[in-house]
Length: 163
Image (cartoon, rainbow, N blue to C red; front, side, top):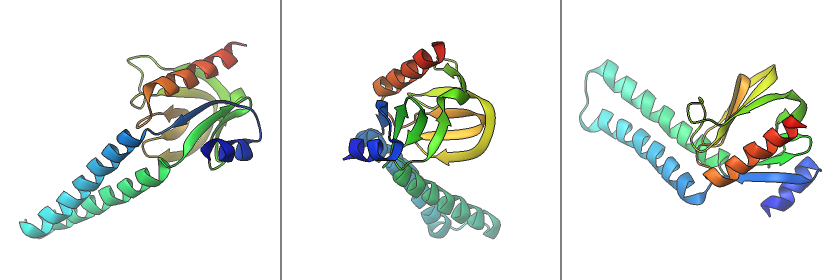
């Protein structure tokens, strides 16, 4: 079903797909959700000074919001076509023409099991927790994704840039 949705949204031949692995997705969601819950629980079970209590509740609520955003974002996948990189909902991350380079080295500032695309042009900042982020002239792909498919996608992008 995901492949059908991806083909409908991009309307081009799919070169590579990247999805969040189920086990990593559950673990990441659980870790962030438990953090938020524990902070809120701590604020009321052993109430510190009022200022700290407010801080714990706000920080815990923020963690719960991030957990929900992570859950929703990782339901989607990423699709690489001849035209560019987009998610399975149809949101275009970037076009192939806009990519300057691919950085997947060990010391690169990149998500876990992922890679970073350096772009020619600035774009708006967007974050899909656990899957990808875009800030200025960089797009980070990875997080709760498997290393193999992410490496394959990065290599396919690098091959297209070399042409």
